[in-house]
Length: 108
Image 1: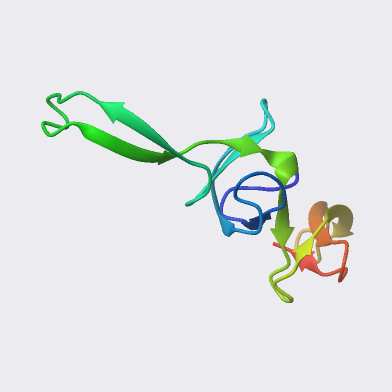
Image 2: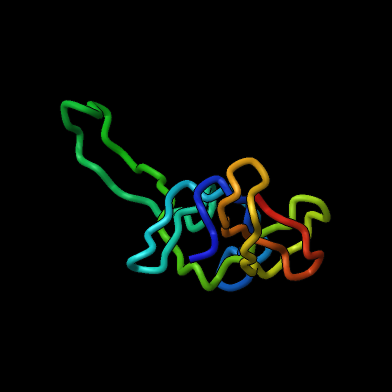
């Protein structure tokens, strides 16, 4: 997966299409991500020791990673991601970095 935790993404498919948010959790095995404020589901809970009131809890559910696109930090537009191998000046070792396909800029 090319997207990581704390990346800003935009949803490109589904009920929340067009909304943006920060990735909270990534599940690479299942190719799914949880995004802040996106794909909210309601869970009805009985009163318990942890929540004596009970009631309806709202929580983010995961969505498929193919339904999100990374937001380019400079242009704030959705972009595809690629990878490049560069030479690190300090250590002299090769390093893999993510790059925006639209602008060619490196994304940390």
